[in-house]
Length: 472
Ligand SMILES: Nc1ncnc2c1ncn2[C@@H]1O[C@H](COP(=O)(O)OP(=O)(O)OP(=O)(O)O)[C@@H](O)[C@H]1O
Ligand SMILES: [Mg+2]
Image (cartoon, rainbow, N blue to C red; front, side):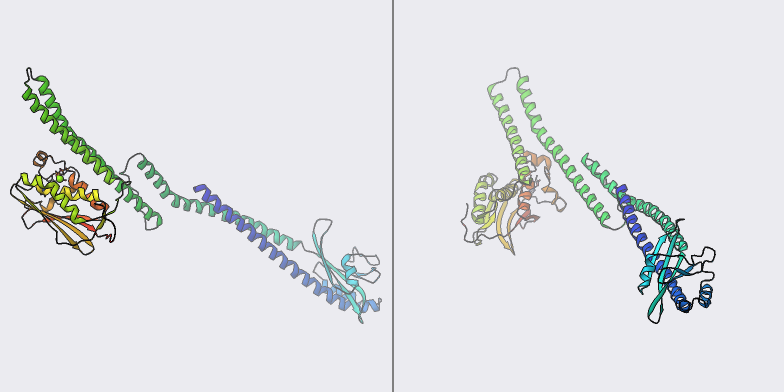
């Protein structure tokens, strides 16, 4: 990743620099060449003007003298040819072409009355720029002035700029490469940390955390990842606790069963009555085990994602009455006055998952009867509170201290462990009730009852199902 980033930067910058160099060198040589040709044409035109009389009167040497003065010290060679391409003047006196025929394309063009220019290579490989301008006397082309000069200086300047630009590009590429390597390190090092943490998580180590540096998208991602780790750690802890609690709960009845079995085996001459008693105890313990397992299954089923609330229209009055009559016998056995105070409430059918809400209300009412001493009172009410429906169950029992009100919903939590265990409590009833109500988007509140005991309020969102057929 780091190298890919660095190479990408270098390639991009190099392409940019090459294109930029080509453009700059093109513009530079264009301007140097055109500048030189303008100067050469200017000189050629002056010479053409001054040399014109020489064509009419070849004996006069003024024109050639003047041309010699104009070109003095420039390194430019001037040649004048007549219409038959014979050189009648050459500024180079040492290798003079005077009297010889000089044929050049641009001279040909100039004979037609137009100026012309060319750039070529000399035999020594030097660049030569040449211009040809017509010599006009009384609107007639009487000859051509041909000028040429070496433009090696221009080529040298261009190649000098070329070399400089090459070194400049290499320098820039190296700098960009180093910079991008540094930058890619800054960008990718948090990603390396992410990979390390993700690997640790996959190994089951949820205690790892990422360092938060600065405030940007990556730090926000790190923050989110840390929250995820925290959540996973919590879930993991809860799972571990749940498994250890469940094993502990299952171990107690199993130990009792083992004890009863050993007692039967160890008794030398057991009489039938004794065995019957042992077996009755054994049956109780098996019942207890079955209850725990059933409740655990219910709890996992409600907690699992696949288990969605199956909403059907339910008449709450009917359902609550059914729960009360199911628990009547338990209340009677303890001389508890169990009654519902909701018959006057006219509540239209509500959409709920019947079985789950039944379980929740049943568990809470069952608790109220179970934990209220003999001759007590348990009352169930139904109220509409805004957009919520409230089932209120109150008792005259010992109540629940404020500090314990959250904990009682935890799995296997019992206020008075031994007493609750004696009553057959698994400590799962309220956990199941909470899951069922939460699944409906509702909640359970705990408070004090006017009877001196506890007050449980089950609040459910009121989804009316007017006109629908009532399921039960
Ligand atoms: N109405 C109540 N009055 C006093 N204490 C209560 C009441 N309801 C619940 N509790 C306390 O909360 C604890 C948790 O209740 P929960 O219903 O979850 O478990 P349980 O009743 O012990 O077992 P299970 O419901 O499986 O039979 C109980 O053990 C009890 O100590
Ligand atoms: Mg209970």
